[in-house]
Length: 339
Image 1 (cartoon, one colour):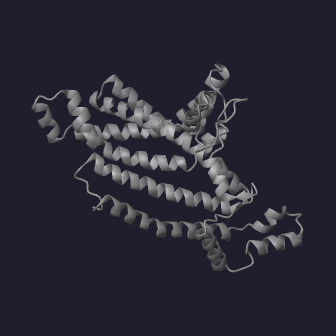
Image 2 (spheres, helix red, strand yellow; image 1 turned 135 degrees about the horizontal axis):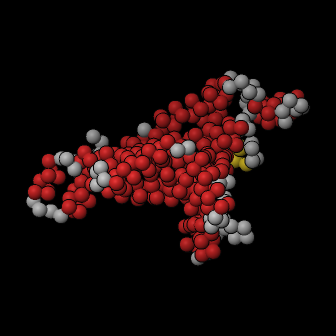
Image 3 (spheres, one colour; image 1 turned 30 degrees about the horizontal axis):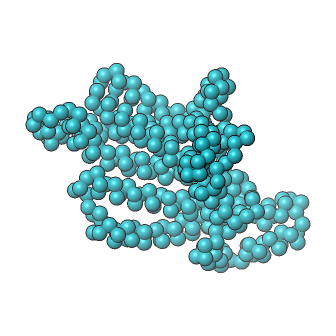
């Protein structure tokens, strides 16, 4: 199957998935025991006329299937609804918060993948050595350690005890944000030549990116080590060694490529999940991203924002799985698209 045909076929599957996500989210958000119109009008002491007007504007006085029809019609025309928490369209709010989460997620996954794969390979090659024991301890710690505790300990150590790193936010006090191009401060700073903002944004990314990457690093390390241990026992690896190839060539050219297939799967799923909003990390580091946006929307019964967030995450998850499938065929020529 050609690459273009495969991508088109996979994207076509996105339509029923998104319809299912919207239907499920819409139904749940509209059957919970909460009076949204009263909440938007000001709570228990709200004016009954105001409540009635809001209920009519939001079509809350009509059957649920009609409300869903109105929502789908707006969605087809690119309208995600109104963010009642911030009094602006949901699309504008997502456009503001998504780049902050994307930048943090990308850097975190770069750290997790780079360190996780290297340490996983070394741990497998040096099996049962002290290096292997240390890396396995790191993996167990990363999986079991609560992320909020790690964030607080890093802040305590490097922002309070030894104040060498900033506590929170994306930029330092008095630093002007780079001209908006993508919303990714590192990229925008490089393009516009704003090296002051570049230095400050990198400086502020250190603690949250390390915090967010630690759990993913541990999982990638563990998966890479397990895959490598299985691959190095294969017949073709023994044959490569028997031919007199250098051990480095055997490990990194022949074994690692096949061992990366499960690692790529885990990395893709983790990236999509982190892009969905690392709520605890963003809250502790006062990071203006999608996690905090979603939590604020839920706490304020801002259902259009919740549904916009859920819809975006469904698209991200499908896209991540598509990219993972494409990488399979790159890593292993025996894997054909569409099989």
